[in-house]
Image 1: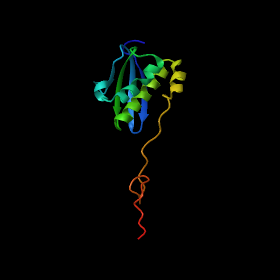
Image 2 (image 1 turned 90 degrees about the vertical axis):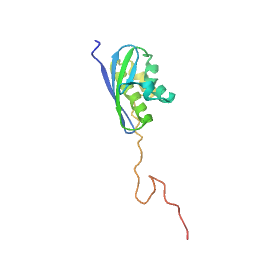
Image 3 (image 1 turned 30 degrees about the horizontal axis):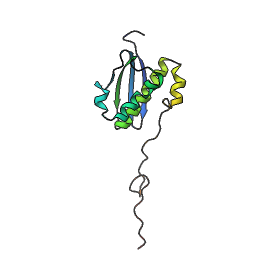
Image 4 (image 1 turned 30 degrees about the vertical axis):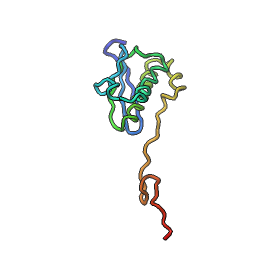
Amino acid sequence: MSEESYIWGTGRRKCAIAQVRLFPGTGAITVNDKPYEEMFPRTEHRHMIEQPLLATNTIGKFRITVKVNGGGLSGQAGAIRHGIARSLAKENELFKPILRKEGLLTRDARVKERKKYGLKRARKAPQYTKR
């Protein structure tokens, strides 16, 4: 793999979509041209992003650049995790069963339920009054 070549993966979670590129490198992760520590101040989100790298023991072997848009911080972190896992599986077929076992290749399909008419939210009904 030359310096300019990369492996890509698309990750999705809720309304967020992440385009992930894996370059051979030192282990720096940049999200929307910023370090991921700056984009995600919460440690839970950082651990979520690092999870596929920890599972495959590849921390420090790839330079990762991500473009992410849509959704909130949790959705974006989940989309980045999904994208990194997909690109790692594409890079080395031996990683696929490891990532599958950890549940990192499965797209989390849970999205917000739509509001129904006559209700206040998706399921919350107005308070019932007898008289």
